[in-house]
Image (tube, rainbow, N blue to C red; front, side, top):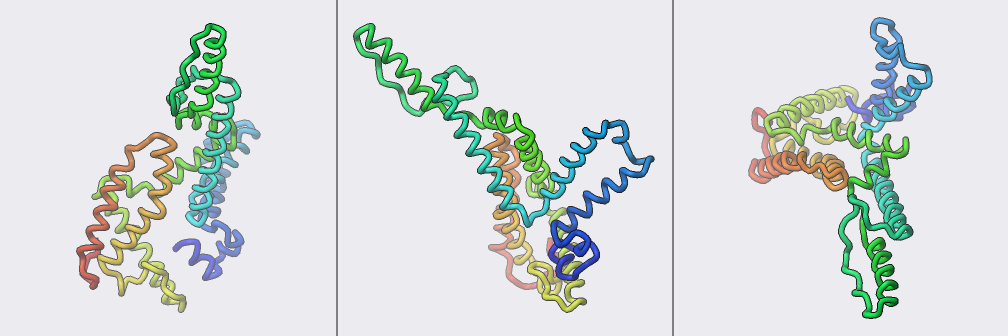
Length: 270
């Protein structure tokens, strides 16, 4: 079951964690509870300060996988990225430096120097300043700048773990489909529990009304609105485009299924 079910059913976990990232909070708590047992505590040699720092990071990373906070994270990351890029651009302009290997080429050519030597020297200085203003930092340079702070490094780690958490659309189609089948079965089991409790059955979780077309539409939506915005950050900001190919292939697969499959129940859904 998901967090929404835990909260709606007032489960012991939801009550204990005050309806906030219920399952993620539970998982993080259980992990550190297990570490309290001597036979499993592989962190026992860490100094207390390092242990507390690691504990903080792990908890933050696990809580970041709560999809209820998905859009909030993407907005926060984009804001950090834009602020860092603007800071670097201002730094280029202020310093007049043009020799950074991680700066893009100028957006336009500077004006040519005048004929006189004196005016020529002045023009050359103007050209250098113009170059600095028009040079833009590359994604690599922005990432390096972000990674200079603890907050920035944590944001980068959150991006990576969130991609790992929902990575199955970036896998080959046969693996992606298997994950979709397993996840869909979890949805159906939750739908049956909701029906038993007299709750409205959540969208996409009613085994009796599910068809290949509704399943395909659900997977299209998941890729378009959850997966793509996150992996686009990896592609455009992290300069890691290799995941996009399988995501595009899998999205096209579900779009074909949704467009060509009649909307009636048909045995196996996958």
